[in-house]
Image (cartoon, rainbow, N blue to C red; front, side, top):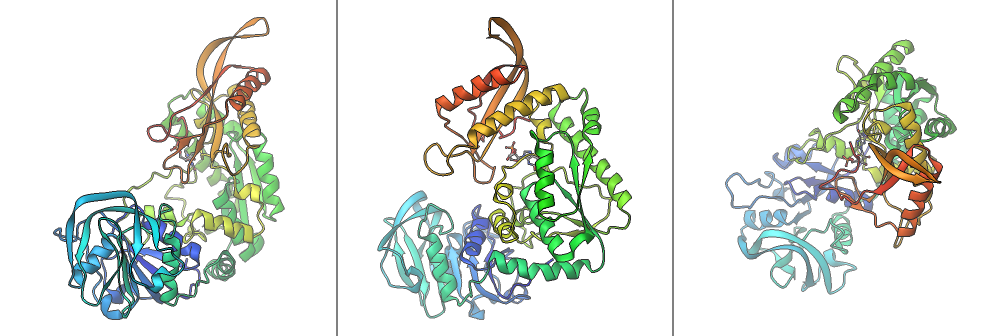
Length: 517
Ligand code: XMP
């Protein structure tokens, strides 16, 4: 389902790991951008919403390699403004009659580039700026019509043909290590005449009509967990079609302390019609006796599907299902209209539904990044606490209660986890000792001896996990203050019966994962 968009910037995907960042930066600037397969002609890729500018991404190939990806046929002749980045720069140089050579020294990491020719691309920049390099080849001879615009100590950093509005950068403007990168991208889309009108507000406005049109008079169902994506998707659909949307909240008994009630209350404040399904016992009985993590995950997933099926059956004729699919999910699953996506992440959401449960999908967020979803959520009046909620695994406490999942052990885990959250919630959002990105407790099926009062204790071990991350793909362990760690240990052992010892997990990801199972 496409939201009405009047113009777009096309980012051609030559395979760099930073590609989604280019799209993201452009959206931050207000230019609607899409990542697209370069293996097509200009006529094909310019169909549909008008293209105002094209960016050629970086990539792992060398331009002289056999089979290296090329420029789309007719791109340059179209007269569209083009910005090449890294591989994109080398490709422009080679195809427009310049020359590319292997660098004597490969350049990875920070560098500085100095401007030596004025250009609208440099508006607002200092004479010398830090940047991030990651290349083996470099442009040796400029193509006809191009000027050298900047250089580092070792390489040509930028070139441009002002007449044709074709520019190229050897460094990566999309990464935060190039502080002026966003300004350069802004300068480029401005000189290309983009309107920069992409905002959460106009997204909401445009998508309401689209959703209403897609659904017509039908009914829609949505499984809600209280997570950001499904909540924002549901609220958007509710705005569009009102109470023809039924939300199901499956309480699997694997949530955090009081979370079920909190989720219900925040959802009903949003005006959503939510049915709570108390399926705690069903989940626990399916999990009984299982200790192997993958089996536990599978059991939770399967039970969710069965509970969901029963409920949908009761609802009668509901042809549509709302899902909170985001743009990176669309790209990673290879449905984004390009095929160079590597690095496929396994999506382990419990919401994976069986094939015979046939719904038509309503995915109002499929063009958005997570931060855009939060902005849309704010626009829709959703509470900040809900929008800033930490990620929580679909299988919930089942993967934090190592060993067998039993209610008596869940009681211990929930209480310990509540203390960890209570204490770390108080940390400031910014600055040294800032609040970690994700923090929680896990319960280990290991007994250890301790002394509590005058008595010997022999009980299980709680592990505290607290990490900083941007996207959960990598994570750094939070360097928590020792006083805080001591307070956590003391409070958990004293206040939660059934715990003899508290340990702090100091494993980064990789090699560890954030969750223990
Ligand atoms: P790992 O443990 O793989 O977790 O480093 C990465 C991030 O994903 C969350 N996580 C899940 N989220 N369903 C989810 O929606 C799941 O099954 C799941 N397992 C892990 C985890 O909390 C972390 O933020």
